[in-house]
Image (tube, rainbow over all chains, first blue to last red; front, top):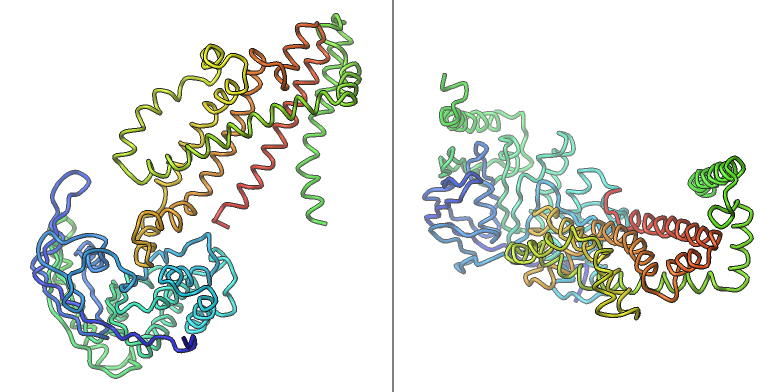
Length: 273
Length: 254
C-alpha cells in the first residue's frame, strides 16, 4: 500500500425518502421533528442545510449517521438502507469530540486502527492527514493543549482519515471565532475538492452556507420540511462582498425570516404579542 | 529546582503538624502527669518505635495489614469496575443492581465483622471479606458515575470511527473516558479499606497493625498502641499522596 496516496475513495449518493421523525420530549409529549422530508444528494456533492433552531437539522443528521431511526420513511446510501452507524460515514461534531486520552495523532489513528490498518502504516497514514490540515508539527501534542481551531482541524483529519464516502458536519465551526472560521471554511473547501467526498453540512450561518455549498437546503420551522433548495452555482473562491453573493444572502434570509416569525408565533415570542 | 520546592511545599506542613502534635502531647503529659501505661510521653513512644523497628515486628505487622488491604482492594476492583461499567451503560442493569447496592451501602464494613468471624473465624478470608465490603462500594459508585458522565458525543464519535460492537466501545471509549473517575474511586476505596482492616484486626487477628494496637492494650503498653496509631496515620498519608499522583496522571483535562 502506497501510504502517500490518500483520499482515493469517491463519495456516495444519499437518498432521504418521505422521512418523518417523532420523538418523546422529556415531559413525555410527542414532538414531530421532521415531516415528509425528501432529499436526494449526489455522490461528491456538498450540501449545506440551514434552518431556524429546533427545525430538525440535527435530527436529520443523526438519522443519516445511523444514531437514530426515522419513525417513517427511509434513508439510503447508494440504495442501501442505513441501519446504524458505520465507519464509511464519518462525522465532525461542533464540540470536536476528540478523545482527550489520546494524542493528536492518536485521535487520527483511532479509526485507522478500527479499520485494521497495520500498525506500521497507521502512523504514516495519520501523518499524511495531519499534513492535510497543517498539524504535522503537533502530532504528539495532547489534544487538551490545542486551540479550538486546531481541535477542529484534528477532528477533520480524523474524519477524513478513515476514507468514508460521506462526511456529516454538525455546525463544525459554530464555536470558533470569525477569523478561524473563515480560515477553516477555505481549508475544508480545498480538502473537499481534493477528496470529493459527499458532505452534508449543517449551519446557522447563511454566509457560511453560500461560501461552501453546491446546494443549500433551507428548512422550515418545526416540524422540519424543505422550504426551498438553492443551487449556488458561483465559482470558487466565492467573494462574500460580490453582488451575486449578497443577492443570494438576501434571498435566503427572507426565506428564513418567514420561518423565524412562525417559530416566534408558536413559542409565544415577541411576534405573538 | 521547582520540583524540589514543590515537594518541600507539600511535605513541610506535615512536619509542622507533627511538631505541633508532639509539643501539645508533651504539654499534656507534663501538666496532668498521667500514668505511663495510659499516656506515655513522646520520648517513651519514640523508644518503643525504635525497638519495634529493630526487632522487625513493625515491618511485619505493617506489611501484613498492607497485604490484606491490597489483595481485597484489587479483588473488589476486579468485580466493581466491570459491574460499574455495565451499570453505567445499561439502564436495565442499573435498575437491577442499584437497589441491592443501596441496601448494602449504608451498612458499615465494621458491622460485618461479627458475621465475618462466624463465617471465617480469624482466618485471612475474614479480613479480606471485611476490606472487600469497604472497598467495593466506593469503586463501584465512582465507576458508574464516571460512565454516566461521559458526553454522548464521545460515544457517537466512537461509533462513526468503527466501534460497532460493545466490546470495542468499552475498551476504546467507555473505559478510558471513565478512567479518571474510576481512579478517584480506587483512591477513596483504599482509604476506607485501610480504616476497615485496622478495625477487623483489632477484633480478630494475630498479626497486623490493628493487632499490634489491641495487643498493646492487653499488655498495658500504651506506647505500643501509640506506635501502631502513628504508623497507620503516616502510611495512610503516603498512600493518599500516591493516589493523588495517579489522579493527576489519569486526568484528561489539562
